[in-house]
Image 1: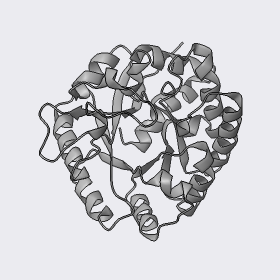
Image 2: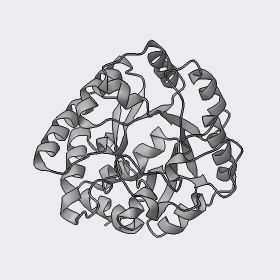
Image 3: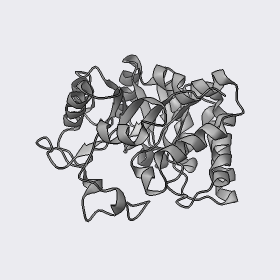
Length: 295
């Protein structure tokens, strides 16, 4: 059996030991309790960089990474991109950058312009998106920013729980030229059968928008004592809904290290798609990510 390389589309880096001026990672501060995951103290190291994830992943055949915004609370989101760009120049393995931008504000375009000074900037994640979808809002400024993302060929990484996926589908259809990537398969908050069926129905609706890709990542976060069988149906449903051409893989590292080791999780993902053809496996594991995130 061919062992295809992986492009890991979801990792986080930080450096609270020697931070650039103005940079913060509030979710990693000592007293912070994660609003969904609760106690994440076991992963709150002072520093985690490309060297760190390379050390953990080097036997998993990973050929590249995508860093997703992590410097929450920083004065200027572009500072994170500048810091990451310096790191990228001497990285042992390539990575690109999905940054933060305040897409619903007057600062959006200036922030995008600042990020664009880095040759490794490839997309945006904005946590303001899900509350906006949940409220049924269509913000003209946000819509204009999404059009700019599409014009510039940038990826829009979208957090969207199942009950907000119909609104996410409408957003994707309003912007057919925008590459939208569903984060963490919609970050399921529960693993019971009723939740699964609601999620699967909404996921299938979201997949009907041809410009949406599903990021298979973060599955362990709300299933901390997961088993080989407990994760399988969630991955199967993603591949069934989106097909091998519109799925990518992410580790959500080091957050998912709270629940297992890197090789175990990645090998499970490989196992779940092993019945697909070699070419289909290669698309999910690396080729789709290489195209979307310019690796």
